[in-house]
Amino acid sequence: MGENKKIIAENRKARFDYFVEETYECGLELVGTEVKSVKNGNVSFPDAFAEIINNEVFLKNFHISEYVYSSIFNHDPDRPKKLLLHKEEIKRLIRKVEEKGFTLIPLNFYLSKGRVKVTLGVCKGKKMFDKRASIKDRDVQREVQREFSQRLRG
Image 1 (cartoon, rainbow, N blue to C red):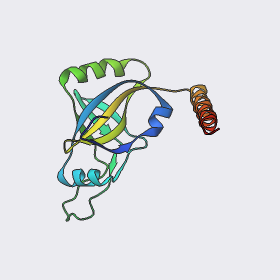
Image 2: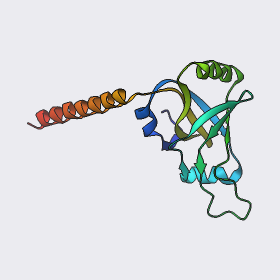
Image 3: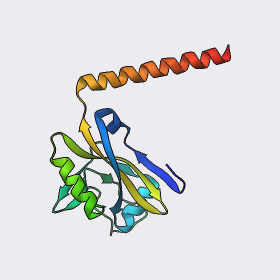
Image 4: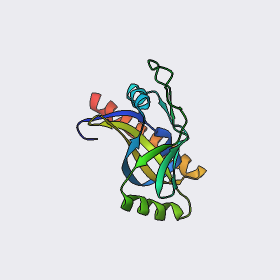
């Protein structure tokens, strides 16, 4: 990530459960108290996904907790949030999602110049043997790193 970007939350499980083909940077259409809650890091999105409805992209199953210091005019924590993308990007996403097995998954949320952004991944689900291979590769990499650091120490 570049300068002026502060990561709020990251979906580590998405990279384990899916192959990420492409990524898109999207803006989020939020109301006032939602922005304050997101900046505090009060978000939860373990099973969040994006859906295209009437050439607009909406983020579903994305929970933003209510802002603690607000009055009775608080937001609905589970409402679908609209993602801000260019028309060409939405058309490209529609073509990709119509292919078999592709879905739109939020990978991380961050602040860029005071605005809340989301990295949206065009993902394809992994099978169980792919997940096992990922675990094995991670363990092998960890073991190699451990041996390398031990040889450096002597």
